[in-house]
Image 1 (cartoon, helix red, strand yellow):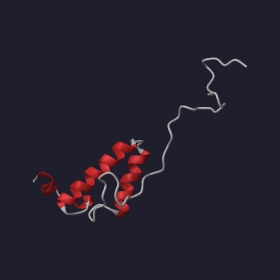
Image 2: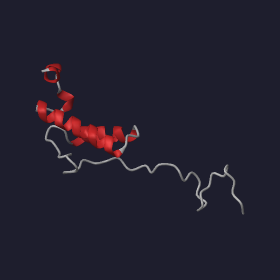
Image 3: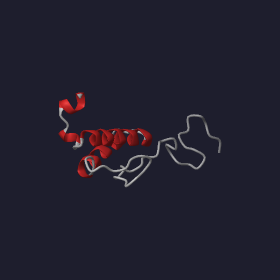
Image 4: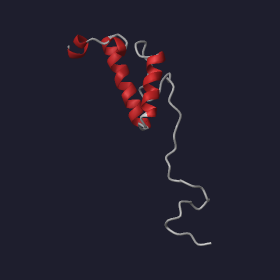
Length: 91
């Protein structure tokens, strides 16, 4: 059986073989490449942001970088990200 360029099946007969693998939303790690958990950024807020990044289709590296940046900002301000004030972010 000959295949044409228009055939949407790969050599194994699977359709849509080029679709990217969708990984499950990440959960809060204890430590992972600099993502040490913070007492100011954890629990439901961390999980919600992680899930939102996953649903937005962000790559694993972007996902980790965004979570790390918010964790570092929370540690700097010494409070949860949902409690940041404008003064903390400016000064």
